[in-house]
Length: 245
Length: 324
Image (cartoon, rainbow over all chains, first blue to last red; front, top):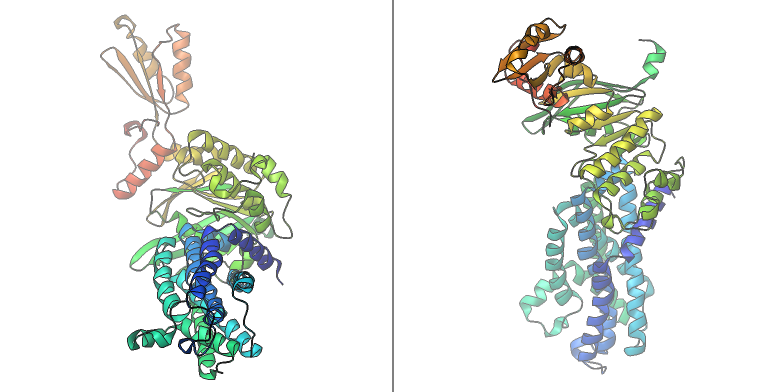
């Protein structure tokens, strides 16, 4: 790999480890809310949770909270801050190829999701147990394309929003409805029809469904997986164009 | 043009034009920078200085014009060019939590010189582990200089290098740029600090509204546009004979006496003659005051002339601008 990209990736990893926003929203928030919500509905199989143990239903759902926190909060704030302060211009003036920064952000986003996801499962294991994965291939595809889609959305927001503050405000406004209706909130079956319809339209709901259903063995939502792949392709194309790659 | 002189041309710009919407920022600009020169771009805010160097670096695409920088077309080969140019940009920063040593590691390519040696040279070695956010303004600018020089650039572009720095930090940065000049590094310096341009630049290009008004060494611009020197001192009524002697000195344009105070308007060389005459007469006044025109006076006059397109005013009648 080009050494310029490697140097940039190494620096971005170091900086991410020192960023309190990442530690708060990508690592701590999903774990704390999973521990609270996962314990709220008991461990007995429940029809509201498609006949699953609610704690394990949430464990399988919360992986996408990490994806959303990375794509909707971490990356937009990070990129908008770089643009606002002229860091990207400095990288450009120093001869960093345009694609090297995009590659660094993609690598950083995927690694953050992987690390935060593993930490989430490591915390969940002794408390609620980790549900067996029924269809590893579909879960892997949903996670991979869902992550790429949300990382691209993050890059896109970071290139559109004028400042780190604006990115934080917009990111939080997108994150919390997605989190409550599409991943970490009440199960869709107990929501009213309006909220359920809103939730169904959210990209995070597609990703959660594409991961949770094959993970718990309660369905093989091919249509939803196709939606997630389409989301990843379209978001990546638009983000790449926007970033002038 | 001979091949040797061509090889000495680092930057050649012909007919550069750049607009933002309806506003023309750079208008038919010609510019040359030769190897080993420290060239200053000066002018008021909005003169088009930063846009010009951004086009030279390939950070902006010109609307028209021909640019060759180190043999590259900046618009077509920006990444190749940027690997040959070291730059310090106006209004740019590094990530707050990036440490000084990590910044050097991040920006160092395979042909980089010893980063530790550069940090030592610019007085930053003790700040090796400090985060960018914790550096003072002067330290940040010195770090930008380190990064600009790190990869053995053939051209260094410095845009508003000392903006917002306190006087001591400015002097530190000036010393660093003077070292570059003395080593023969080619530097294109954008500044509206005219004492900075006067102290550091071998040639200065004055711009207004995207056009070059004039160029030359700071001394040449001062001589062409700033007017003469002014010498003032008090004399006793019995010593008024000195006025006639001063009027006869070479380079003296005018001598006036008002309320016991003599004002001599003259060219720069005449300052020595006036001083010698006073010494010869044994009448060196205690309140002797000499105002020497500087680059600021030259630029102000140039800008003023550009506003009112009238013939140049004779040296003797120009209004002098007090040195700041």
